[in-house]
Amino acid sequence: MKIIKIITVTLLIWACGKQVQNQNFDQIVKKKEYTALMFIAPDCPLCMKLATPFSALSDSFPNVQFLAVYSGMYYEPMEINMFATETRLKPPIFRDYNYEVAHQLNAGITPEFFLLDSNSNVLYQGMLDDRTVIIGTYKQIWNKHYLSDAITATLAKKPIKVKKTEAVGCVLEY
Image 1 (cartoon, rainbow, N blue to C red):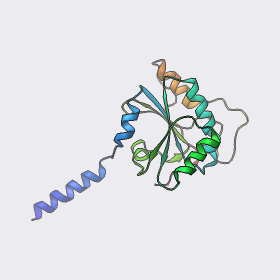
Image 2: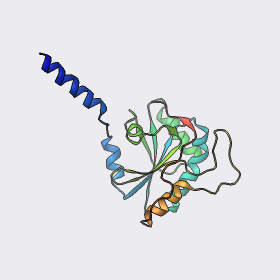
Image 3: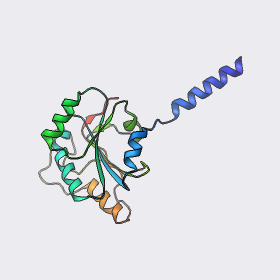
Image 4: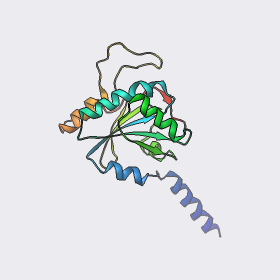
């Protein structure tokens, strides 16, 4: 009986430490060699501000798949659709109901941007650019284009100079 308890506890500990992967998300990511992501929340002011530049970036890189990811079930589909309409967000929105994708990628902020390869490996994580360094303030001129630079380097088969930045925005609440 004691052995069964030990085995059960060991299996539970092992299962809890194992990362859940969203199979639907992984299938979508496999469709193209690279995928750029933006984690969004409809009430996040910075998401509202950066959704349009993210969409413009998608026009600049037609060979890269662009997706927005909404994690959780707090907002109704109509609220998410209104966000997309108001910000002119072009990329499709993936609904991550149970935060599986957020956990898989270790996302913690909205907006937080990622560049993935077709195996869902993170090549870049962080800010879109350096226009916002502190929440609530915006630079008039910014000169660092982190996500764009990461995509350009990756497509040219060159190393990404900045692989991670600290995203600024609203906390992604799990």
